[in-house]
Image 1 (cartoon, one colour):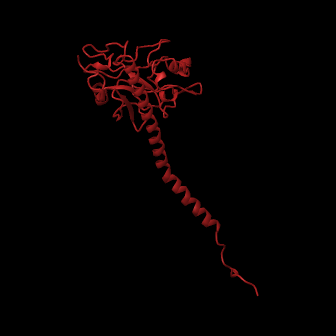
Image 2 (cartoon, one colour):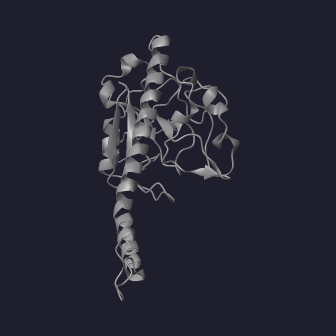
Image 3 (cartoon, rainbow, N blue to C red):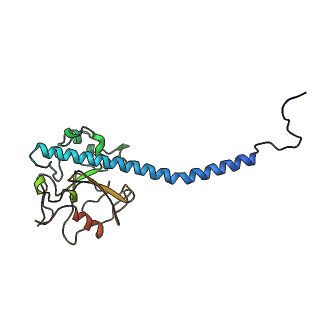
Length: 251
C-alpha cells in the first residue's frame, strides 16, 4: 500500500509558464506603482537634510554674532582668500575653489559647526571634472559686514540690532547652480527689479531659506528656472516681490 496522494493522469502542472508570466506582469505593475512614492520619499528625505543644514548654518551665524557683540559675519562681494562667512568662487570652468574645502574650513562660521557637509544640499548634483561642488548656499547680500547698498534707500544689516524682524529676514538661501559663485546673494530692491542672482528649485520647484531667528522656511516658486540647464533671464513678478519682502527694509 502506498501512502500519499498521486496526481491524476492529465492533470496540469501546478505552476505553468503562463502563470509565471502573469505573476511577473503583476509584480512589474506593482513596482511601477511604487516608484513615484519611493521618489517622493527620497525627495522628502533630501529636503529634510537641507532644512537641517540651514538650521545648523543659521545657528553658527547666531553664535558668531553672540561672540562678537552682535557683529554679523563678513559677507563681501567677490570674496577671495579673505575669511568671510565663506570664501572662494564657484564656476563650471574647473576652478579649484569648486572642491577646495579650505574655502569653508578657514572661513568665519566653520569653527561653530565643524561640518563641511552642511554647506551643500543633497539634491545639488552640480559637479566639475566628476567631483561634486562643495557649496549650495549663499548669504543675503544685505546682511553682514562688508556688503554693499545694492539699491539706495534700503538698510544694510551689519549688526543683529539692525535686523528689525528676524523671522522675516532671510540669511541663507539655496542658489541656482548656474548662478552661484561667491557666497553673496544679491536682491535688487527697486520696484522694477529682475533677479540678479537666482534661487535654486531643488525641492518640488521650491527652495529652503534660513532666517535670522534660526528658523527655516520652504517657499515654492512660480516662475523660477529649473535647476538643470541654463538660466533664461529676466525673471520678474511675484517671485521677486516675495524675495524682496524677506530681504531688507527701507531706511
